[in-house]
Length: 107
Image (tube, rainbow, N blue to C red; front, side, top):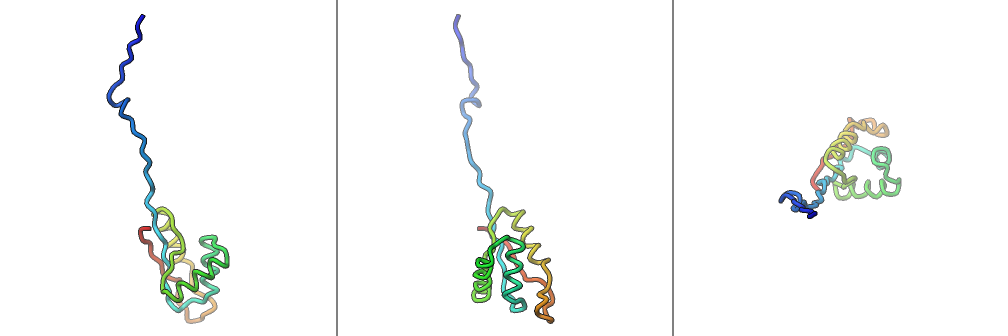
C-alpha cells in the first residue's frame, strides 16, 4: 500500500510574520502655571514613575519646554494624555486655572 501525500500550495507557503504595534510618546508641555511638586505628584500618580524620575522630567519640561513622559501603543497613549489634561489645577498656585497640556506623537 502506497501513501500519497497531497498538499495544497497554501499549506506549503505558510509564512510566519511578526507584526509590531506602533508606539507613541506622551509629551508633557511646560506652561509656568504649575509647581514642580504638582508635576512630580501627577507623574507618580498617573504613570507610576519614581519621585526621582518625575523630578528629572519636571526639570526637563521646565528647561526644554517639553518632555516625553511615557511610550506605549496609541489607545493607551491617548488615555494617558487625557489623564494629564483632567488632572486638575495646581492647588498650590491660586491663579492656576487647570491641568497641564500634553499631546501624543509617533515614537
